[in-house]
Length: 245
Ligand code: FPP
Image (cartoon, rainbow, N blue to C red; front, side, top):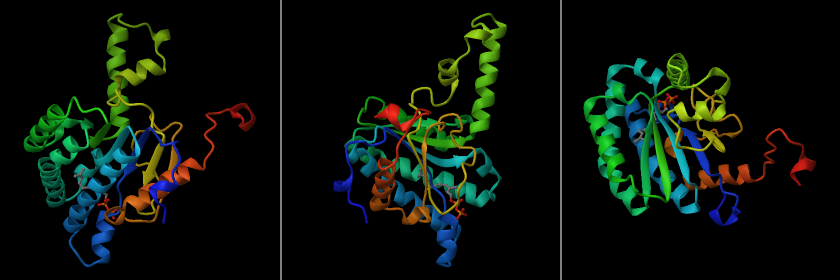
């Protein structure tokens, strides 16, 4: 088990997490899927607090994908209720830890209650500066890229930008993540090793970390273990080892 004292100062600036396995956690225990999501929601707090404590500046959580709308209505309703409850309850945790809340995704498609609560917490925490917690809600990376291409195309058509000036910065500025740096470490729980339409552009140089642990069981020691593993890797960004040293 890894303790935070074993970590060095190379803390990833931006950690993104695909919180997977709530359903399997519940099934293993003979419980309803909703109970898995409830416990998944509890696991969020420990990870948020500990990321803030060790100095992660940006934490992005995949809470609800565009594809998740296809789940049974009861499950979608449960997830939306959990979101509203967590926002109401955890605003204190955000304020106490000086954490700013942010959201990415098609927020218009969220139920009114969830959107209103979300926007209120974003507003109340907007001057917090220790860490930015981004919830990906009704988020899909392909949808984000389509939106980006549409917006840039309109600017080209209206002569606001010429096509040969379109570069990485221009694209970054049109993504939902425009105020966030690239992801350094992407964690996925539950043993699945895929990206599932999450931050496709933004993880171009991220280190990927997969663990068998189901999300409701993911504790601070598991977070430290993921970061410990990250710290052992050499990030070359296309260069050679010799160039780096
Ligand atoms: C994946 O488990 C998880 C989700 C679809 C949603 C994640 C939501 C939470 C952790 C709770 C609410 C979030 C916040 C921010 C309060 P799964 O249902 O796909 O699990 P399975 O693959 O085992 O079925």
